[in-house]
Image (cartoon, rainbow, N blue to C red; front, side, top):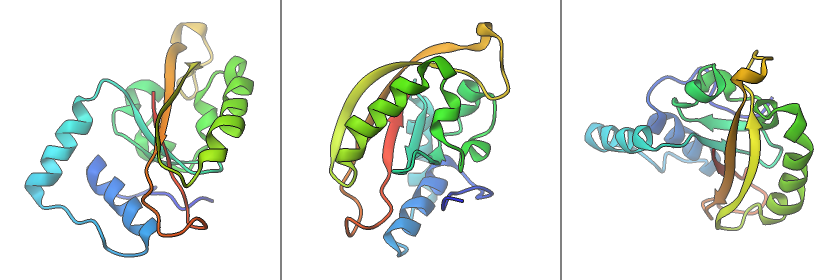
Amino acid sequence: MADVLVGSEGSDVKRLAALFNRILGAETISLSPPVQMLCDAMIGARPDFLFAVNAQGTILFASSTCLELAGVSAQTLEGEAFETLIDVQDRTDYRQFFADTLLPLVGKPFSKLGPLDVRIAPVGETTSDSIRWAALRAGSIDLFPNPDSNNALFFSV
């Protein structure tokens, strides 16, 4: 199973800082309570849903607002393949976008690749009424100490 934050408690920012610290191999990021509250407010105010996904397509982090998108908590999504959120009709396009466009850029900074329009199906929903269109955008930052480390791609849906 991927190294994820399943079972981690706390805010989105605390969970994201814990992920970065684990990837960096040191307690590099620490947040004072006021900064944590400010960052949580900024993430919570975004109109989109945020994910960190590794090069294998596994969700390492999902913002708490993903409950609205996926129908399950962020912690439940962490450790799952991102493509499980995508309606089966669009998985081939997603896999091709991931393999041809994203994987060659792993470990390099980039922003706003996409969008790839996909249908998102909430977990456990099978009716077409629950499926919604979303524009998938991806980005990455050069945060990691070496190219062999775990890399994270950031998805905005």
